[in-house]
Structures are given as C-alpha cells and as structure tokens.
Image: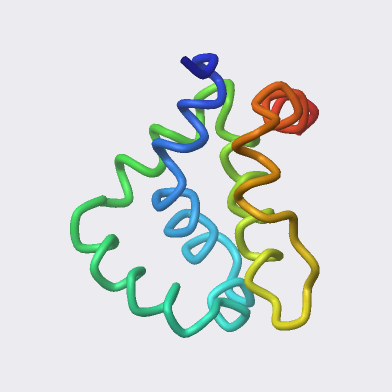
Length: 100
C-alpha cells in the first residue's frame, strides 16, 4: 500500500485542478481540452468551502505538485516513462513521489 501522503495527493487530484482554476486565472487556459471537460463535471461536486478546507492541509502543496506533473505530462511531444517502467519498479515510483 502507498503511504498516506501519496494517497492524499492521488485522492485530491481533481480538487487540486479546481483549486488552481479558482486561484490562478491563467491556469485554466493552459489545460488540455479533456481536462477542461472533466473540470466542469468535477466542479459541480466540490464547493469553494471544501477547497478552502483542503488548502489548509499539510500535504496540499504536494497535491498541487502532483497536479502540475499531470499537466506537464499532457504536453504533446513530451517524453514520459511507460507504465511498464513504473509497474516493474514500485520502489522507484515511491522514491519519485516522496521527492515532491
């Protein structure tokens, strides 16, 4: 099982996107079309009060960093490691996550 910090970042990945859209006007314009589409669906379920509450969590900045990694991975032509790479190296995955 993943450490609690990693699970928090994964669990609140969508909320991190919503938060960034609310707090950074330029952020939304940089999202991939698919992310903009899911934002509309996800935003309907999470209010501003909940996002403000999450923002005070000790791992919230880590969740925002994970979100930034996800956004960067969606850039056309950007080289990424395959899923097989991460699946066969769980220790490498965990070490990378904890360096956030």
